[in-house]
Length: 447
Image (cartoon, rainbow, N blue to C red; front, side, top):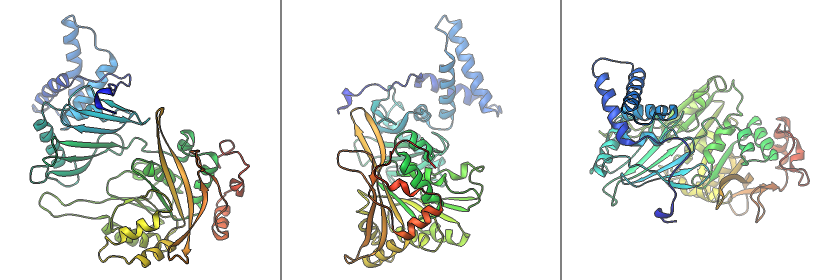
């Protein structure tokens, strides 16, 4: 679909005018520079005064919803986010694509793409200046974003409880390109995923029992298929007393944000090297350290390279209930995907060793699928397979437990797992009737 055919974004909530926001930002910044330290109060006063000025001039009254939106946008502008701030707290926006200061597209949770009605900066140069400030100040280490360092990534503390992830490129393309990913479902549960159609009642019960039984699970799928959201929901099933270590490139799971549900969480985030080239802490470093902290479970947000070997070691060390995510086109492709990533480790993991480690470390692979349709986007669990020992083909045996028939978008049971896994699941509360193909999939109790 070409850009001119896309609709303007309209969620029914007013979008502040960037020029107004910038003028109010300057007023607020001037007051804050005069030793007024309560930013919330200053911004509110400035916006209320602006609304009063409009009324005195005979202009239409400013609605309460507009005032609230302007206040949020001014706070974001004061934080150095410029025109990007107005996009970050829209509940329906999932991805933001900036292809130059005046060419902004947003993807919504329903899968639609729309044009943002305002530029996010006065020029491409101003956009790159804003991004340079964000990368220098918003991350845990300062990153340079300049002609000498034209690629940068950072998580910023805006856009929701878990923040948002910004990836940007300059000089290597015709105009600066920015992709922003908002983590919308910060506290998703299996109940939520059942309600929105990602899971039926049968899968809800099976996955809940999987966590309770302490099985090691790898969640796989393509980009934006819902891997992290499902992993987050699985983590919500972990009993409160357990010590969970989460290891991520960027905080996306958010267990540490809910101390009532998860009081014993060690949430670790990798760290890139700073502008001076030092201070890097990798996922591999963190996974090795995790085992020294006596975890009940180790959960990894996503593995993308040679740290797969550390993940397999962590899941195979005897601690039950480890989980993680991995990009893969299907559950069947996972062993070869792991073997390929193992080649990126230092030293490389031989392919036959990768297959043996996979067989010993994993119990289940849960593959999620994204369905893009004319009427919107939905995500579902496409298949669940049991990981068995290395077989005659010298790869781990994969036995389907649930699979999606051709032409359908929800999986049906193929058969129960091996007796030793079924016994663990049954003792964790699973009703073996979930594997009965004749049983209704969507009705009934979750647990």
